[in-house]
Amino acid sequence: IKATEQELLKIGFEKVFDGNYKRYQINLLKTNIYLRPSLDKWYFGFINNGQDCEINDCYELEFIHEIQNLIFSLTRISLTVAQQAGTSPNVPSLGLVPSYENNNF
Image 1 (cartoon, one colour):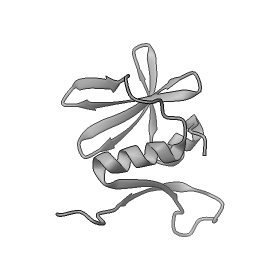
Image 2 (tube, helix red, strand yellow):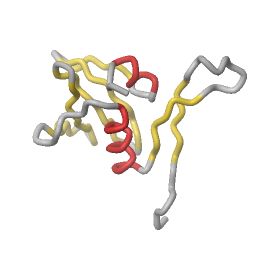
Image 3 (cartoon, helix red, strand yellow):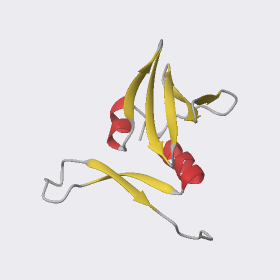
Image 4 (cartoon, one colour):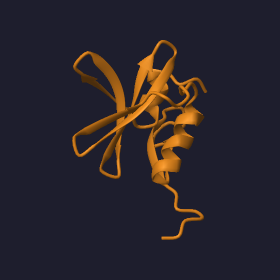
């Protein structure tokens, strides 16, 4: 699935305007992880304790599965689109699914 603004919102990101930039961010483990659009791809960054760090030297993210894999590798939280109880099966809603498989907690 191509990473679009609509798809990011489906997996729990929220739109934030920071000065001149539009970002999509999600707060996980006390860190805001964000994606910033650049043409048809996305740049990744995070904000922790007020420190903003954008990773410009990594590959550009283009697909939802790349974003899900990156978030999971950093947080061990799976971002999925889930169905709310009692709603139509055609209406997706946010589902943050913690996954602790193969971890040494």
